[in-house]
Image 1 (cartoon, rainbow, N blue to C red):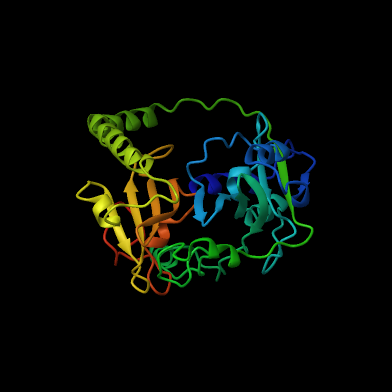
Image 2: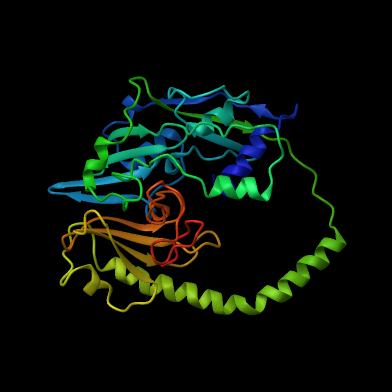
Length: 337
């Protein structure tokens, strides 16, 4: 779960008498079929989705496909409130959550599939069962074991440990089927106003000392991010799904810094090109990805910043554990080309 999701979960778990639950907003998926991404966003009440760098664009013969992560169509937060958007018709394994918004959050992952810019299907992902608790407090060892433990197979890979989307558009056959009455439902809460916190002089001094340590390196980090975005962005701009790479993936990449080619061990005719970019909206370097089949680009993600979630799949082993087996991966499964 991302830091943002953890923060939302913390807010939703808090129950204060002053918090006001707003009426749920339910939009049947059947009413969205045939709409453009902008029309879908408007119908749901989501924020503007024109900037779609983190979607999966794919070419399959004459078909032009785009897969949007469901998080792109989260309902926008009202002033002074929070919203959770998900698919309440998807069954959950285990005990239900006492907080309906937390339960809906577990049902919030999935894919909106567009063909020629028109919605053709919505596929909710099966929620991962809650981690069982033995009642003992978490320790560093237990947390590390959980982080480094195996994960369920992603629908984006044909087998665990394989490169993502090696079979291109056939991934649509693996996406979970949707219930006939599937809806995109949003639950929002209006939060009470809070008093402004008082300044803590001790904390101010501590943060000032941290700033004195970190700030001298900021210009160098910004320069490196700018270079990565400029050079990596130009490389991604030069191709699109359907483009042929003269000389193949390795020749296209050459000796460029921050760019790697990964070949699928089982299917070496398929490769993923990973391109390091700047930090974007957080402090983690984003990655651009190109899926290449026999020297032709079949799919792309212009900026995988955690929503498309293809980059972490490059750093998984045959048991779907985080792995540093591939160059550019660390032992926690983080990819930095």
